[in-house]
Figure 1: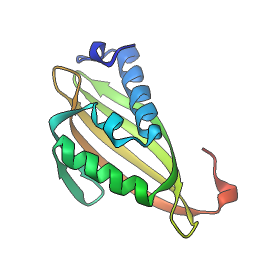
Figure 2: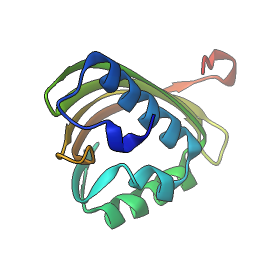
Figure 3: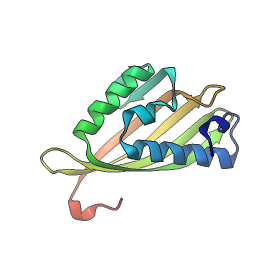
Figure 4: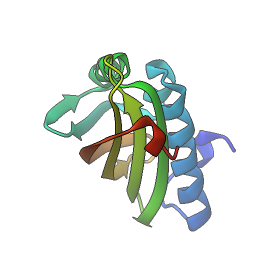
Amino acid sequence: MSTTLLIPPFTLETALQKVQLAEDAWNSRDPERVCLAYSVETEWRNRTEFINGREAAKEFLKRKWAKELNYKLKKELWGFRENRMAVRFEYEWHNASGQWFRSYGNELWEFDKHGLMRKRFASINDLPIQESERKL
């Protein structure tokens, strides 16, 4: 389905599709592709970093995936209403020295009338794991 058809207010079907599209985009590890889903003036909180604007988000993602190697993500819709969603996620990655992590978190999303995400607030915790403990 085209992302242009996924505009608020969301139904269960369109909310699930929106989450899957986000998962697919983030798993591409392509900042250009990912940022197409965000408004030009998007606002993010990612851990302790505050990001304002699509271009700043793109630069953040470049730094993120330069550090978080072999990144693999799974997202799950937790709830939705009108133009907002709550999403649970986990992803696995390793650093340059080979230490694997599983990162868990929650995101709160708010969309504009065109279906672009204008706010993304993420809370994330990292758990060091052995490579043999990977599940994604």
